[in-house]
Figure 1: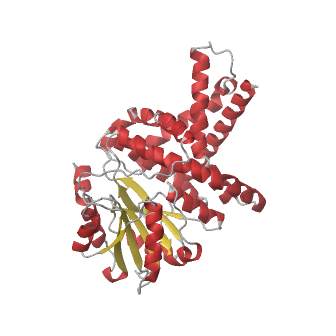
Figure 2: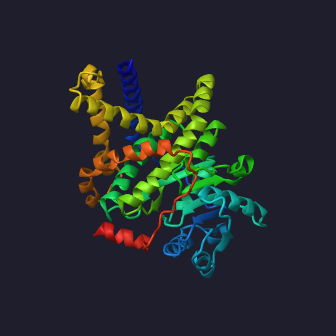
Figure 3: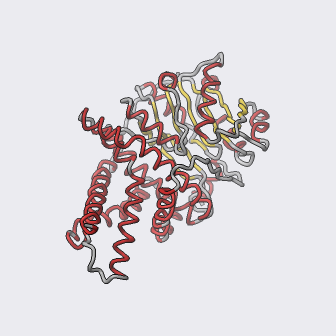
Amino acid sequence: MLDSIMLGLQFTLIVVGAYQLGLTFFGWYRRKNKAQHAPQKTFAVLVAAHNEEQVIGALIENLKNLDYPKELYDIFVIADNCTDKTAQIARDMGVYACERHNPNLRGKGYAIEWMLKELWKMPRQYDAVVMFDADNLASPDYLRHMNNDLCEGSKVIQAYLDTKNPNDSWITASYAISYFFSNRFWQLPRTNLKLANFLGGTGMCFETGLLKQIGWGATSLVEDLEFSMRCVKLGVKPTFNPDAKVYDEKPLTFRASARQRLRWMQGHFDVCRRYFFVLLWQGIKERNWTKIDAAIYSANVYNFFLGSIVTMAVWFDNIVLGGSHLTKLYEVSPTLFNVVTISIYVLLPISMIMDKASLKTYKYLILYPVFMFSWWPITIYAFFTQNNKQWSHTEHTRVIRLEDMHSKQAG
């Protein structure tokens, strides 16, 4: 009985892996000659910030210098439960500082929900709302790309996510490698296949009409994934713009990284529990592959969880019990197993080459498997603590500007 269950789990995991591998073939090309539109859309640029006095100034400076008519966008810093000078710095730099104090409802999702309600009350209304984290930097042409996509009919847009500090440590480099892979072989294939893309927490753009129609309502630990699933459920496909780049600062240490990833996985379990079966059933009933694909995507957290359990069980059987108690899929079909597992790892450097990663980052591919294996205990712990709704803040202690990044890459 146990052997049959384990074999069934292995088969399910390899089928999902083969599906994900199949998608990557549609990420080898990018459509060119996208339509260009004169700047016309107005934007409310929201920056979610909790005690970010170290980095908020650099982002405001970056946003004020975007290559877009200044009269067409305003910057709002959401100083959420701040006890430092975040709000004062925003005011001193000439942007809106919106202070929120609610210790019982903490976290980015609640802050955004509050800010949107405040925004709708203001005399000036905007065509779209853009959201950043306080530690971000945006490419100068970011709003031009959002303007183009909105003019072409997109209602929810995710920018290309890159890493602001890829070579600070093996941890930040591992995040960077993950971003190269996900942008090229997770997001771009879905764009090319006209499936729904998925929001990445920052660099997001939303048509105001849609936000007013359906509300924000995404207050989980992974508000980006939650809103993505809500959109797909309602028949709205988020899109991906690979030309609009947003740079995100990643934690330097393994401990800070583990805390951040634990929050992500706890939230991911929560969202999967609420949306997987709904989207899967709707997709089957409506013969809508976009919804089925979204359901599969929401269940990735269980791929990690079950994959780690199965792998550890197989290792235990081989090393401790002599390998005679469980049937291993790689023994039944070694070719299929090896093709799927090896191909996925080989795609990492390929994605880096295609998206022109810094040469310094390649050396960290050696340690990347350690980073991936570290997801196992994090995911298992997240499974048993998935009801936790406590937001954990990632601290930032230094300033990085766009010109600093470019000078480092050139060097």
